[in-house]
Image 1 (cartoon, rainbow, N blue to C red):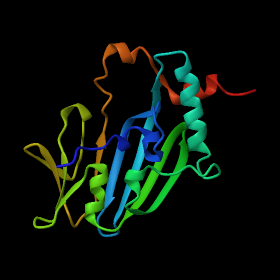
Image 2: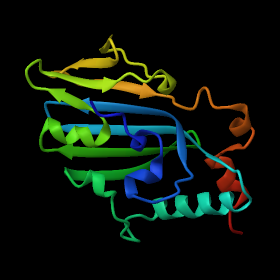
Image 3: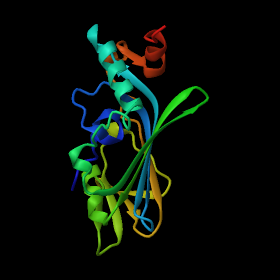
Amino acid sequence: MEQIKIFFFALVSFFGIEDGRIAAEKTTVTVYPKTNEIEIVQEDLFTVLEREEDASLAVKQWNTLANWEEDEIVWAKALDGFAARRFTIKTVDDNILPHLKFTYHSEQDLRAMGIWYNEERNQFSINHIPRNNMKTENGALSGNYWVFDGDEPFSFTIEPFMDMPDKFKNLKKSLKELLVENKED
């Protein structure tokens, strides 16, 4: 069984940018089996500033994402199996909300994101990893897996940084705050 992928909470990983510095406190993933779409919305973006240069690297990565179409940034190779890929950045109440939407050819394509499909049972499954703090209203925990009906849309949220070690909590800064501090005059 595939492990849930870092894609869901490390924003720049969708674009294959190495040494990613931008993560999401909360990610909501919705899969629409009838239309072969998967939608990902990230909330409360942040970075961990361990070194002085981490702030400028995070701002640079954000600027790359904000201008991804103009700069012709390439999607991560792991996403090559998705027929359509869309990325928009929404702002709601001053909060930055990256919004990604993918169209897949077959259920097997979702393995690139750590979502497994069992055709015999017509069910989708995701490994249960307690530290990801996964929640869902339409899935069921069965042993080590979250299981979802293959005929209905399903969604889940993950909050993998809820139990972040204090060492890193003290180095954490919201992306919004970092961008304001580093805004060019």
